[in-house]
Length: 143
Image (cartoon, rainbow, N blue to C red; front, side, top):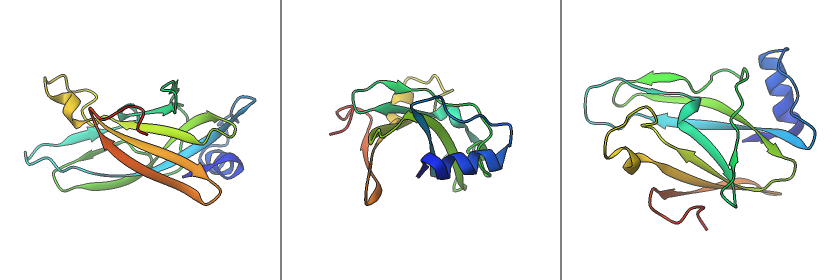
């Protein structure tokens, strides 16, 4: 994860027309590793729409639709395929405890689609970022 001035520099480098975040906010770039672990020989798409960020109180932080550093997260993967890419949010300055929701079946309206949702608790402290994952159905936000 990259935030603050370093994140702003990376975002401006990705596209000089990207605006800085609003007053009182800073960019948070999250590098995400994904893998298609489905057993069915079927292409699965993933994009920034598959991710949501929440503060520790459960309030959603809006996803930004700006140019991110290369590579972005938009990808189609066959089973076993892997990809690493960036997503970006504007978070309130100093906000340390966040929860990243990953819904790989965002566009799939199957009855069991909710079973694939995962939550990652992100704490950003002086020693850096650490994440802890929890499955759908676990306490949200994760403790």
